[in-house]
Image 1 (cartoon, helix red, strand yellow):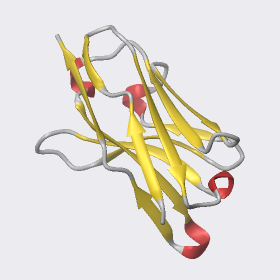
Image 2 (image 1 turned 90 degrees about the vertical axis):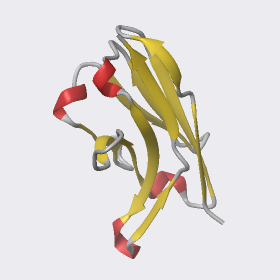
Image 3 (image 1 turned 135 degrees about the vertical axis):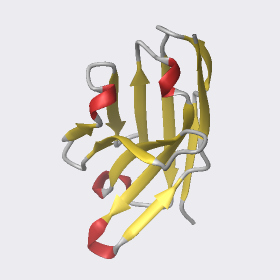
Length: 117
C-alpha cells in the first residue's frame, strides 16, 4: 500500500519560510520522480517543483530562486524549502510520486500553506 504523508504546512507572514516534508512508503522511492504541486482556491493544480531519481530539478518560474526541492533516498523523503514566501504562494501543497515506465502516479493528502500579508 502506497502512502505519501506531507507535513510542515502552516501559517506564516510574507517574507517568512516553511519547509515541507513528504514521507513515502510502499514504493521503491529512489526510482520515482518526486514532485510538489499546489492548488489555490478556484485554480487548477499546478506543478511547483520536481526532482528526478538522479537529482535533476525543475521549478515553475514563480518560485525560482525562492524554493528548493531535495530528496533523501535513505529516508524515503522529499522536501520543499520555501523562502521569501508571498501571499500568492497560499495553497494546498501536494506531494506526488511518479514512475512513467509503469504509468504510476501517487498523491499525498495535501498540506495547507497560508501566507499572510
